[in-house]
Image (cartoon, rainbow, N blue to C red):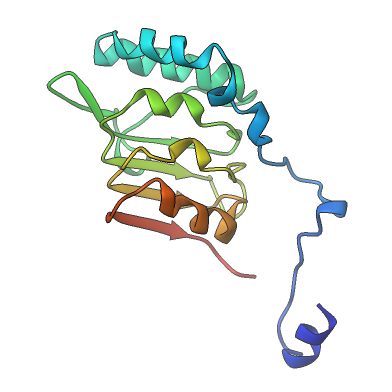
Length: 171
């Protein structure tokens, strides 16, 4: 850090030292719901439901796993309702201010768009996008979350030749 400060004297450099962390940390991989032995059964039950009930079940599970999350699942860019076509939920977004575990989103196997938005710079608690691995989502928008650039690199495993939008701000 000292060498970087010397090289860039007019820049403010903030280092998120894990020893000094005061913000919520991402859920440990072993604590994610997707690693719970009950997850496959829960997911199968949800996928057998009509799309509207799937949205309700995923919302309820997200609230259970993420205290403070209000359960609001919306359409593109936090507007309207999640998009459904032929009984399939395919576009979804939510405010991630109190969300650290997005494992329940895996129930939507045909998602083409997922928006995870913090309400303002750094307000989103989401940092771990590993539950999306293997989902082949067409577009993921990850904006104003604490995970910043760290999650952008890991997401490449979850999308195969598709678009990933990671919007973050350097201070």
